[in-house]
Amino acid sequence: MGWGSALVRTAGRAVGRLPRGSLSLGLPAKCMSAATMMQTRGLMWSVEKEQGHTYKPVEEIIDHNRITLAMESTMEASKDSSRIKEILEAARERSFLKDHTPTKSEYVQGLTVEEMATLLNVDPANEEIMNEIYDTAFAIKNRIYGNRIVLFAPLYIANYCVNQCTYCSFRAPNKTIARTVLTDEQIRQEVEALEKQGHRRLLVLTGEHPKYTFDSFLHALHVVSEVRTEPCGNIRRINVEIPSLSVSDMKRLKATDVVGTYTLFQETYHQPTFKVMHPAGPKSDYPHRLLTMDRAFRGGVDDVGLGVLFGLYDYRYECLAMVMHANHLEAEYGAGPHTISVPRMRPAEGAETSVNPPYPVDDAHFRKLVAILRIAVPYTGMILSTRESPEMRAELLKVGMSQMSAGSRTDVGAYHRQADDTTEQNLGNLAGQFTLSDHRPVAEIVEHLIRNNYVPSWCTACYRKGRTGEAFMKIAKAGNIHNFCHPNSLLTLQEYLQDYASEDLKKIGEELIAKESSTGLSDSAQRVLDRKMSKITDIQTLTIGYGKHPASLGKGARLVWIAQDQRIAAMFKEATEGSASGDNIC
Image 1 (cartoon, helix red, strand yellow):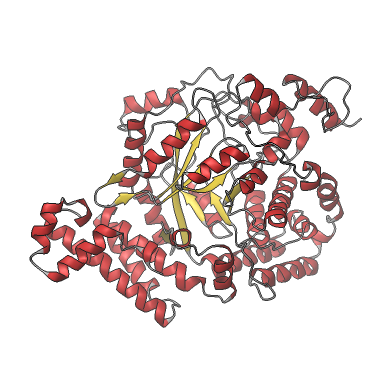
Image 2 (image 1 turned 45 degrees about the horizontal axis):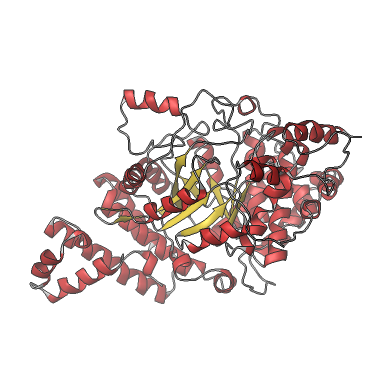
């Protein structure tokens, strides 16, 4: 009997999962699963009301033996520069879709498991080979995403949790933090504060606890979606990172019609480690958690995000398993993940594992794994959190990241409270889910991106226009992404500059827009960009002249102003019926 089985038995007994004497990672039929036990005890956030669903065994989805064999058998190949170049060239060809037939999925597998294992085994000190990897990752990122970086912010609704994850400050045994749930009014204040920073995209999160139910969360989503601020603040895309859901509750989430991506981290794909790190609570059921995305697709939620927490186990295993999971979703449901997140463990109050992670990942290996993931999943968005320092984030943008959080807080209610010393001290008692390493405000991050020739973007046009799946991949194969995404990004940047930026930031931002507006666009895309950009500046002219954004005026005030000029009437119509931003460009 191996050490893995012993770990599983020890952790399993803590939640009643495995009886003494069981030698299997699976359960005897007579045994009640951890998820079922939690559901029976009323601790589970989401209860399955649909019966009869059967799923592929988790051991077939994450093939442990294949992963470990690939890691071991490719050690020598990882030192062969000619073999590395051969793998990278093949990956580049796949990412450019030269032999690809567009399907309803945007997922493209850039590397086989064995190819990816070979790259992951490369010594980061081997500069020659690593430069080849970085150059390939940059070429792929540049072709697909250009210099656009999508910005968002996390919004924590509640920090109550019944789970006992050893690395998280929200864990149930942690008595050092105050627990709280935002009221509707506090949620509105949080969203107002975020909109006034310029945010259009949010990632909404909560812990798992009967004190804050799934019904309460669904209500909160509608509260978030309805918040409006002057001059024209509104949230255009709400993604969620919440506990595992049943098929029946996935359908309820989908029915809200306000949710974009459903994200859930497996945390670690290595089963023995998973059991040790999650000793109790609904989350302790590895199969139930792994099959969450299967339930999402069956419930109609086909826009999902995967992730692992690097530091819990060997990063090579985690990368291979996560891509294996993505491949399963593509094969089973015709769609891979929309995003992949790559958080690295950071200290969290009351969570010893977070301070001394069992498999820490240093900067060199982390940069390497990010580049390899970009090569492995070229059309999947990669998300960078504020767990990383500004310097590290700048490096990772060069090798694969396409989205990043800005101005983040992980403590509940932190955005709308006045940031004085007393408030900061009180917020410290609440404690965030983990420690942040990038504390820059949104404006500073936007400025940094602009000065480094990136285009900050808040665009959501593809989702709202249905330009996803097969439609998106046809555009991609034709090499035409730039003509859609780049103008839209520039328009959302112009909106941000006019509504939220200082004069200095506006100046350098508009200089970037002027340069980027004439970079590689087709004649038709250029004409549409010019027309839409003029509408945004026209609305700004109205705002300056009248003192308020047209959309914020009452009916009587509009009629008085419109009566003066038909051109103004047209501008009012544009401003009050919909944003002139890139969300409506194509």
